[in-house]
Length: 300
Image: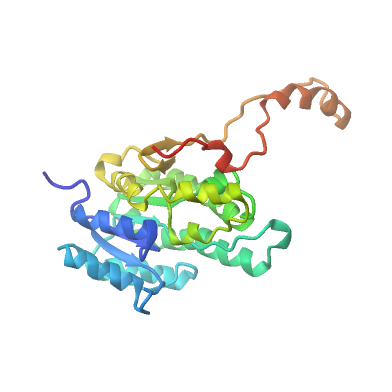
């Protein structure tokens, strides 16, 4: 039986290791032609992207390496041009490239803020925007963006990462709306997985160390099947959604909607807001709870 993504051309950023590498291997195994984009190096000093390409070719798949940065407009466009030059078209962009520069908000530097925003948010926009004219012209295409529960729910010490990952959700929704008429969809995946990036998160308390041990049980390869589905023709009717994958669980996340309202015919003052509006809505407030406290069960 033909694969769901047979002969599709997929650009995957940050594909030299971790979740991105698993995406690249999974898509190639399913017959897709893959652009493996990564700036990273292997332990022996080689190109991480080239190493993944070699692995794919050894298994009989088709892939080409791109060592361009997602964080600059021109180089991001060259990533997309690589797909066109090598394979003649582009069908899917997976915005997976990422870095962390964790620091409590009150200590975070401009450099730490800018570096994370440049890769996660600006990089996602640059690569997605580079592919948009081709998707529009061929009246098909799919975007898959990586978000995080650090943004969707919250996590201490990650203001830069959380802000960028929530902004990626807004970017994905806007793409889904703007490109709908051209048969192009856009979705987000929030992954739980043990990777080199998550391994760098500080574990300075016993509770944080215990959470990290649990995270080690969540394999990056478990994320890939959802991405393959979303890129396939079978996923053509799915757009503007936020999914999560945690071991063998797949989640659908809620999106912001009005849940309570209060009305006062003569209008509001600060005093009547304190007396009426806030007490009426307070039972619907969300607790200021970090992400790990909301997924307390063991991975399934």
